[in-house]
Each structure stands twice: as structure tokens, then as C-alpha cells.
Image (cartoon, rainbow, N blue to C red; front, side):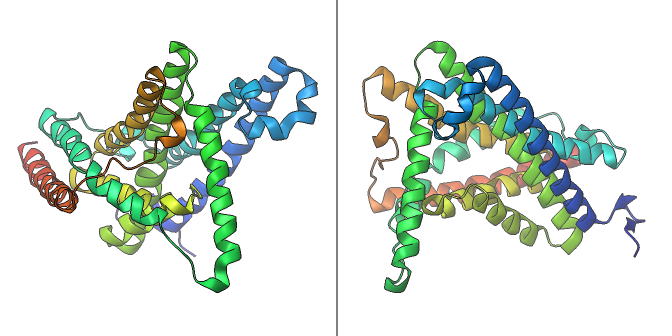
Length: 308
């Protein structure tokens, strides 16, 4: 079997995906081991009997849990696509197209993320109201329980007890996932699927589905899939991964900053996912403006490439 693609001198895209998966598994194992060693140094070997508390985000072991989250993000998402680029004997900035961001395009990305918020709220609310058929009630209960458990962990993670906590949360929840997940999903998976299928739209949406599914949050699946597709189109239109990373960062950083604001004003964090509430035409207007901004981004990116 020939795994070489002569046209672009890269290995077969399906083999790229297998290598990416292998690197991700290896990275997850190695960095989990490093995280465990660090946790042992902090809490001592007695932590073994409290592993469930550690992994559930118990406040007593929150520092250790955050260390695990940060190292896991680096080992599972950031390093594997970098390793893939070097496997192809290319620098990551060349392999994944890290061009210099243009001010106009950056401005459009920021405006798009802001304009899309009401529409994404409507999608998220609709997804949370999902009800399965009667014969799947057991599955629905399991999904709800998983969602509630994930929410409890999330609340512990975003709880800020000092300014340092806020900085750590910004790094752990916004910066590292924005870089790592965009490298892995848009740079790695979407890029390889596009080469495999020669259909950018199929690659974008399939990657978005995988991106949402891997988070294992059933009542946030649709909005996360749409976000994944949005990041994918930013990458596709611009051929520059920076715009997808910046959009991802803005989305996550907003959640971190909103949680920080709520705590400063003594508002309960379990109400953070409550919808603001807009009239129906507000949601419709948000969707129309978002689509128009994506079209503007696409046209502007094409003009920028012609100027280059």
C-alpha cells in the first residue's frame, strides 16, 4: 500500500490521522504520569486513597486537579499536532499556516463572536431542553447525571479565590484549549480530512462533530458543534490558524471573565448558564448579522491573499 502523496509530498492523510491519534494517546499517558508525580510531591502518597476526590474537583485538591488539566491539555492537544508537523519534516507554523494576523480580519472575528452571542444562547437553550423518547428515559437520566457532574466540576474550576486563580483559569480554560484544540482539530484533523475527501465543507463539519463529541457534554453538543464549524470556516477562508485560535480564545475567555465578574458581585456561579433572554427578533437579527460577518470575513480574507 502506498502511503505517500506525491503531489504535496505528505504521507497519506488517513495515516496522518492515525499518527495524530497515536501521538495524542502517547502524550496523554506521558503527561498524566508527569502530573501524577507532581500531585504526589504536593499531597504525598496518601492522595491515592482520595483519587476520586481529586478527580472530581474537590476544593481541597483543586491545585492538583488544575495541574492535571493543564498538563493533560498540553500532552493531548498541543504536542501531538506539533509532532505530526515535524514527522512531515515541516515547521508547525508552515504546516498549519500561521500567518501574520491582519487587523481588519481580527476586528471581524471579534465582532462576529459578539454578534453571535444571542443566537448561540438560543441554540444552547434549545439543546438543553432536549427530551428523549420514553424508551430511552434511562439513557436520558444518565446523560443528565453526567451533565450535572460536569457542571459541578466546572464550577469548582472557575471559582476564583485570588487574582492568581483568575490568571491560572485564563491559561487553563482559555489560552491552552484555544491553542491546543485548534491545532488538534482544525490544524490536524480538519486539514487531514480535507486532503482525504477533497471536500472542505465535509471536513469542517465532520471535525466539528468530533470536536463536540469529545467533550462528552450532551446538552451542549449542538452549540459546541456550531462553534467548531465556525472555527473551521475561519481557518478555511483565511488559510491562517490564528483566527480560529483567537475566536476560540474569545469564546472561552468570556466564560472565565463572566465567572470572575459574578463572583466579584456575589452572584451564584450555578446560574452562569442561565439565558439572558432576548425577543425572537433579537435571535434572528443575531443570526443574520453573524452570517453577514462571516461573508465579510471570507471576502476580506480573499482580498488579503490577492494582495500578498
